Length: 377
Picture (cartoon, rainbow, N blue to C red):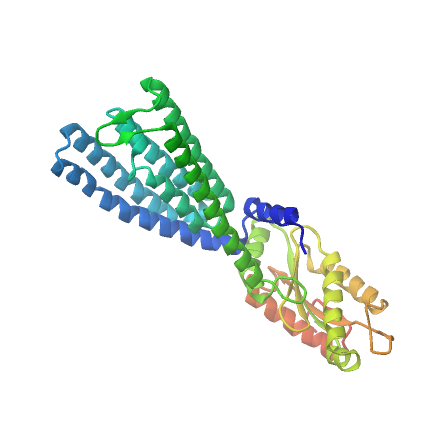
């Protein structure tokens, strides 16, 4: 059983770690959804000054409320326009999260200028803090949820301290909003913290589901779906940096015979052994995926010549090692064939590179197997 402290460390590392590419895509869609919801709510907020006017509130309150509502609608349209291109603005979720929390605080400050107890015991306005924290779950970024939740707690705590110290009363009170007690304010701060924990739990659950859906159950390696999602970004990064990137498609030779001579369990051990050996050759920012029964894809950040040397060296080493044995304990050789394709010479997208690498892999198979091909015959 996994130790509890290790589990907690894993949760914290997941929430605070670099956001996965899939999660970034989901977060971009979530930010756009948040922007649309914000725009709709801002339109509804325009009704609040009218309701206040009908309720007999003073002209000053109605005018200030209407001005804030108009400003909120203008900003909502700005955030919506930016959210349509969110992947180009990594700062946008933090900016909109700060805006949502700070606007809530600003409204409470304006309310407090007339009646401090109204600001401290407000139900409608205060719940916009909760809404701002809840919306972070749609962005799928644990760091953002912690930031927005922490900002809400800090701003509201500062407001409570300032109002209670400024009024000179331990428990400010009003006829319409009752008594604002210290205990009640502490409870509100705890509710904000609890909402932050809930948002983080939702994000962690989403991150785990995405991670599991993109992983191969046998080896723990990324699968085809992960590859198709991540490879375009790696290709774009290599082009931007002016670096070479080589895709290698690898297939084990005679794998059916291993299953027949040693059994399915030995076949699974062979797959895991190959996966471990392939991982040892990876350098920083390189990746390995299992896309089929005995097929693997490597993305290597080096020219095709260097990739050929590295993979061919591994092929020779593996052929001389005893990574798996048959039912009688005799070692079974693990050999593979591979085809390489380089970006940009052989293609600029994943499909093109996979097509070229597969063609060269089949060429290696026809030439006798147990070889690596980096060019067309």
